[in-house]
Image (tube, rainbow, N blue to C red; front, side, top):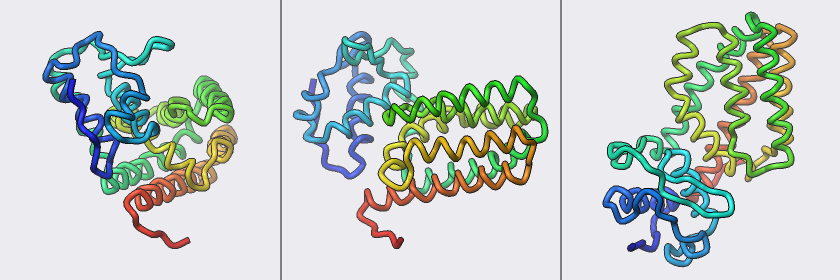
Length: 244
């Protein structure tokens, strides 16, 4: 099995592409165990953080399976999934992320206003459960972002708008990937798990109070703040100085 040293800026994408190609060519087969993180770091000449980011992306895409205490293994997939496993999800360059964040603001600011008007007892319970998971994340800064996604999706379901829900379903995988991939960039800036929790709590309370305007304002402020930190992270990663 041949692995090449990484020389490009977007390190984790290069790692993902190499491993994906090894699977597609059959050099890594379903059930095969990947080398350890330490071995991959030495062979690819990259940081452990880059290895973990790549493995996390491959796991999310369904190519790899992490078994606690055993290691990381290639999953058994259909051939078409191996050849093209949602590769479009890897084009997470600054422009693509900006477009996704724009869509989130268009959809979610309106959605939260509708949720504040229409949320029923069951919707409030689901939002409360998601908020509790977000609170649990305060003690787990390496969270995969699933509780964050659950909270935002619960808001969408509370709109009772089938087309809105279908639209969110359509971009759900990309949203999950974006949330997971962007958390490290968020935590490098002003955001902490505690601050993210407080912003979600304000949104939740506005929905419970059925305050449409407040819910929209809180959601817009939250998404704008997240956008600024993620884009700042991309600029710093590529050597672009930002003005504070």
